[in-house]
Length: 190
Ligand SMILES: [Zn+2]
View 1 (cartoon, rainbow, N blue to C red):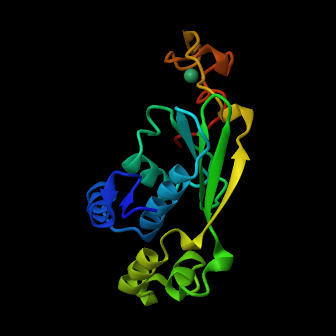
View 2 (cartoon, rainbow, N blue to C red):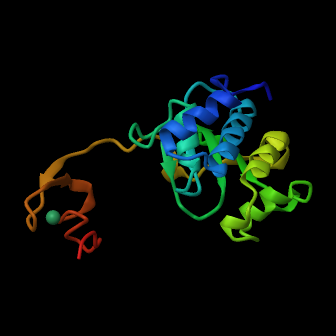
């Protein structure tokens, strides 16, 4: 680990970027910066990498601030299974490295433990100490392993044909079936 995150920002610069982009200095986004950095430093060889986040909270913003992978360009995929983990993988082979915040390794960092496992109500947490512990711990609280992502995350879904939905009249990808997914039962509005 160098003193810059993802060879892009110093930790202080990254904290400024978090506040500008995310609105507040979210602890999860700071830890996420170390997670992105740790994964990138240890990823297998290859040129083109996609990211997979296992939660929709905080981590996707860390990936978007520190790498070219965004939700909008399709290089960042989010599969919200509720785990604080992210993976960078070679986009054609699916070979990659997964990094997670290791709850079992937090004994030396009580304020991170309080925050991560919600052991204390938010207003009883010591934010300054929490940030200090995160900056001290760096990658020391992270677990890492080599993985191969499921084939549905590998490669980019090609566009395919666009058709008009017989129910709502709006355009949608034909591969979704005879009607758009909104008319097919995915409730969006009441
Ligand atoms: Zn429709």
